Length: 158
Ligand code: ADP
Image (tube, rainbow, N blue to C red; front, side, top):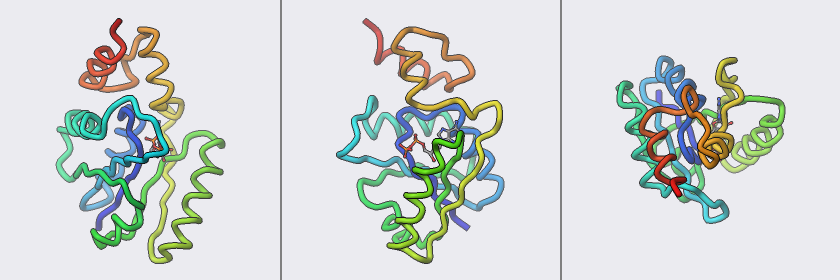
């Protein structure tokens, strides 16, 4: 069975990687779907985000990285997939994820959203937080992989 994990991944963090690793043990294939929304401002281009994900997940075999600028459920239909994976960190994630899952249920009733709890050691990591640390030249060890660390340093070098 295929599970699709959509997100911005701007950039991919240890939290995302932990979730992907765990899901790769449960599903035949995990598609990391990099979303490209005109509503959002990204630090990395979609190609950069894809490359960083591929470099960070080189050790996993059953992962595919793709991008989409449309609805996630349309991508799932095309792939004949039925499962969307999303991560849940603190309570603040809940409302957003619940609203999105309900909207997806309304427009694609045969698709299920599975919410996976963040591992305790990673629950506080967000792409936003990582960018904030990087912007001020703070230490990124344990937050992102080496390729992401280098890419962030490059983006924020003066
Ligand atoms: P989006 O902009 O679509 O929310 P993100 O790239 O920020 O995309 O996150 C993608 C998914 O991964 C979301 O469901 C988010 O809650 C989850 N996620 C983000 N960070 C972590 C983490 N540290 N542990 C587990 N899940 C996470």
